[in-house]
Image 1 (cartoon, helix red, strand yellow):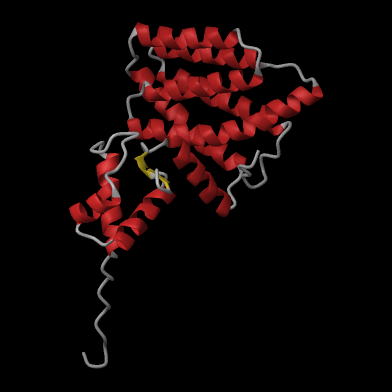
Image 2: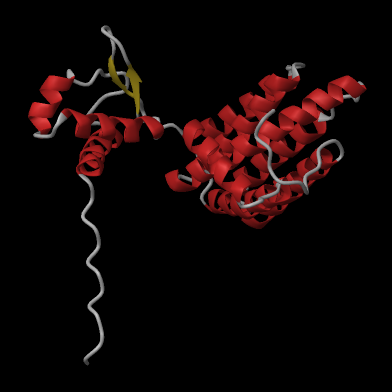
Length: 252
């Protein structure tokens, strides 16, 4: 038909983006090891057949993604960093803050994710050795009195429990959500200490032991229900001292 224009062709990626993509792939696939220093600038420009400005721009892209650390100066260089769930969690938190996400939203996501993973786990219970390792973690946590350690051990139990389901993507999602929960739980600990409120961690740990028993028995529905009730309890306790309806604030 006359009068119609052809859609514009997509813009070709810039040279720096192409170089960043190549180096990114090498890093995330393990072709460049954690802590490895990249070759000197002159060597890399020759290897990649690009100009120095292009290489420097590519490294700036990777630096913003925390995949490299650039040390400038005469004794400087570029060091490779392994992709980190912690860095991803911080980025995710910023995105959620931008979209006015609340802590209640994060807890709701957690209650959709973790019980489903635990039901899957209970349907095919892991070995006794793996369940005993979880029991050891609960016992270790019961002996702790430092709120920060209690929080870290509690979060570790959640992560290791989900990890036993055997889905790496699900485990990573849980780790990202756990980081957001932990940041706000730190506020709960600080406020509880100031108010001299006694710790009720023992009651929460009882739920940890109960879910292990249900998983061991192969009771998928019971394990999922137990964990959902546990998460609801955690959320209710947090809401006593932290406004869980306000937009996420990662600055503790």
